[in-house]
Image (cartoon, rainbow, N blue to C red; front, side, top):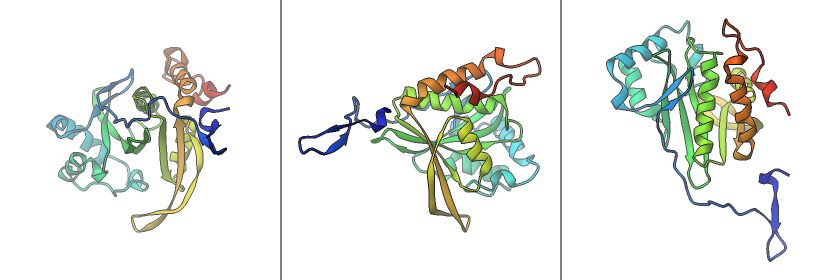
Length: 240
């Protein structure tokens, strides 16, 4: 039986969940995360120097169209100054941590850790902007691996992924990354003046050791040919 389903009986004959070895609140400690293909730099005003701002603005400003913003909470950026203001304010997400994604010495996107519930040891990966320069790339998968690894190593019990139920690419990505679909929250919120049903996914700490082995096997150099194409898909490494 999975740990989250195990129960015990209390003195009143009622079933209750198992006690935790560490029930105290935890807070995510943000630091630079290094991978083979990508580096995640903690977003702050201090690192938004002219060079980095030029790189991230170039990504945003050279997108083919505005479809990359459809399912995010903002509709894109009209100027570099508008983008800087959003970055400096963590896109107005409360209690969030954001990272700039660096690939080949250039900033090509960002990703957030949102809705941290310190008392419950829960955190969410979200507000993901992977520019056209990194979509469906080895780096994008490594970014998710680095975040999951950091969260579980710091003691989080649950990492969430939430998206508009109509955002099919995000739902497919969540499943590919090893998240389990938990259901849909109907009329969960109003997004840009429209109804949004929200799909919920999660990975639990007890599931991470197996998933980490799959990620490491997939990221291994031997899993890619000379053209950088994968030989075995990540999901195949996750199969028992």
